[in-house]
Amino acid sequence: MEQNSQTKWGQFIPLVTVFFFWGFVAASNDILIPVFKKAFDLSQSESQLVSIAFYVAYTVGSLIYVGISGLMKKDLINTIGYKNSLALGLTISAVGTLLFYPAANLGSFPLMLSGLFIVALGFSLQQTVANPLAIALGPIKTGSQRLTLAGGINNLGTTIGPLIVSFAIFGSISSATNDVSIESVKIPYLCLGAAFLAVALFLKLSPLPDKPAIVEAKLDDTSVKGSALKYPQLVLGMIGIFVYVGVEVSTASNLPAYMEKDLGFAIKDIAPYISLYWASMMIGRWTGAVEAFTDNVDTQKILRFIAPYLAFAIFLGVNAAFGHDLAPFYVYALIILVLIIADFMSKGNPARMLLIFSGIGILALLIGMFTTGMVSVYAFTSVGLFCSTLWPCIFTLAVSGLGKHTSQGSSYLIMMIMGGGIVSWLQGYVSQIIGIQHSYVIGILCFAYLAYYAWKVSGILRAQGINFDEKIAGGH
Image 1 (cartoon, rainbow, N blue to C red):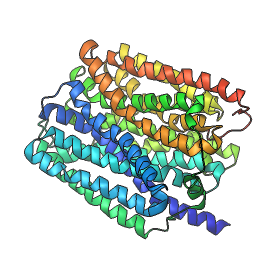
Image 2: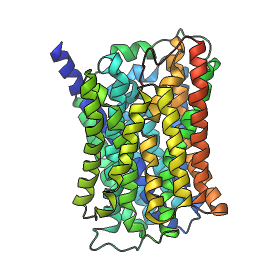
Image 3: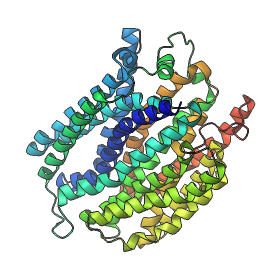
């Protein structure tokens, strides 16, 4: 039994490399946005086309997958195998990175967007495979914690991605200038494409199962009739995923413009704060993943204090390695205490956690909107802390009680990732009317809906006989 457990962790480790890449590229987009904005003389809303191209590709990819499976009358992924599907997704993403070379030579913004779209199209296939696979590689009762842990690895990528891409574009701190050359994005993304292909080969040779029994049974179920859309928790949850990914992405993608325009930061100096935002996601997810390591309640309580500060130490270490001044970030340790207290208050109930974290998210955005200087920056970056565990909360609540419609419902939820692009563009558009700082009212509306969903879905699920205080299912 112990050997079997070790084998599954041996399979889980190579799998999370793709989670790392998703985070690395997604957060690096926040560095590309101000670079493209200056190089191509774009408005703030036009610069957010980067987010739209990237996140809408997830929806397009999901629709292509569903369409091909429908034409084949059998599941595409189950037909070609899980490792082959991951390798195919990575290869598609590698093709997208190749477009950065001619796009930079031609100075073409549309071609740049096309490259990002294709990269994310590959990510869509990878995510369709990797999320259920992460749950399947071990006991079901800790499946959601493994998914949260994989999300923590994802956020390790989001933490270092902006720093590496910023270094590649602007150079070291001592030699960096604020000059922006679109030519400078070519080499970083060609290297990224080579890394995609290397990982595809690595996964092909890894012990990762091609057709794990648990996942295969779910995807091969062609007897399911009716629609998951008849369940209100799913329909409301789809909107929840849309606005959640929206506020998560738009908060970060509009932050560079706020810091540059309103606070006078140079573009080259913004990367550490983008890194802090995505590190905040890692801090929260590492806190929420402690149950994947131990069943001992007392040990879990201790780890809930250790895990977030360990993640914070990694953020500090990475920034120190890149030569950034760490002094502005030490005060953030106090804000992390708010996350820990909120985590204990939730008591593992996903609806309660969603309500509490959404409320604190609203408060953080209000502080950011009505203060100035570094207080506002810390307030906006802390949104990452309170977004960190909302994905598994919403996902768990939305598919609870769906029974045989669970897989269908999950695919609908993945499609709603497009909210990351649309809400970012909307905030960029609103910023042109009321200013960037006050445009964060869009994020407040997103959190307000999530708080409403937490309240509403609790009643819906109780009426169906599902009580998370009695049976915790994926609370983190």
